[in-house]
Length: 123
Image 1: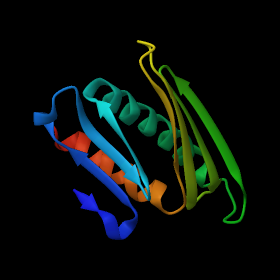
Image 2: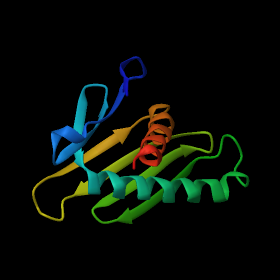
Image 3: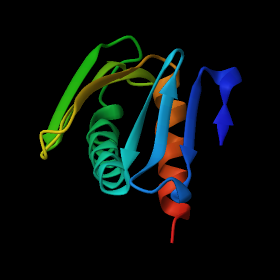
């Protein structure tokens, strides 16, 4: 799935071997292993559940900040109940690489749902 017109890319190519998932926004991209993609998905679901649990209590203009850590990931959601950004920090457990990602409003919501759909469609 290539979404250049939406400023983001999400690709799955199992033929690539170890780094078979690609997430890109604007002028950067990162490749992930399947286990890293799975743990990212798990964390995205958890932070979305936290947001959903408080969403009805928030006013439209109220600012929120949620944070979760599940090694190797740290994730921070910031924004309002209907528009938010995500920031990620990845610390490799193998000490091979570390990186940070930032998904701005409105890319964060679109990319979250596409990752959810991709993960749910996998075998």
